[in-house]
Amino acid sequence: MPNSYVKIDVHMVFHIKSGTQPIAAADTARLFSYIGGIVRSEGGMPVEIGGTGTHVHALFSLPPTKSMSDFARVLKSKSSRWLKDLGYTHFSWQEGYGAFSVSPSTMPKVVNYIRNQEEHHRRHTFKEECMMFFDAYRIPYDEKYLSPATPSGGSAG
Image (tube, rainbow, N blue to C red; front, side, top):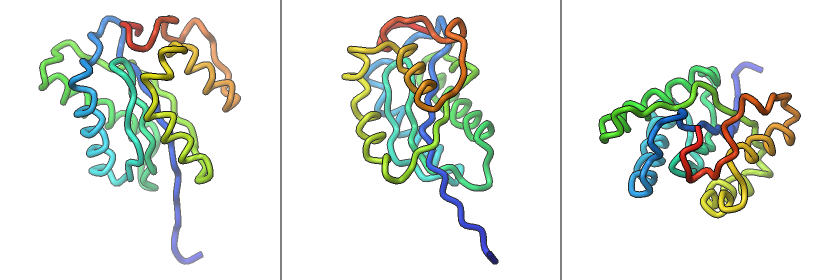
């Protein structure tokens, strides 16, 4: 093929660090919009950004010139800096993240899932959510390294 054609859709999830103040409800919509801008500025295409005051779900097309780890680092560092400028002086994201491939046929389902995070977390903790993804994608994990089993709206880290 004389040209390269790449389309990699990713559902990325990352959580605040333990001891970090959760993001106020009044600031989450602005944060999600800001993260969408970071995705665009880095050459990606945001599809849906959402979550809760303790974690972010970002559905986007990964630019073919970026590695997943570099893209996650940029998203987290720029959004963390923005939150600190907003007044979250001791804010940090956890070091890790989850990134899951998304097929075109499941995009609407993932968009809906991200849009309904508040409802989802009335029934499931962030830890349970992570375990669900790891099981679905057959990713081995050790529960002791997952965030505590507290509701996502709380101060789990």
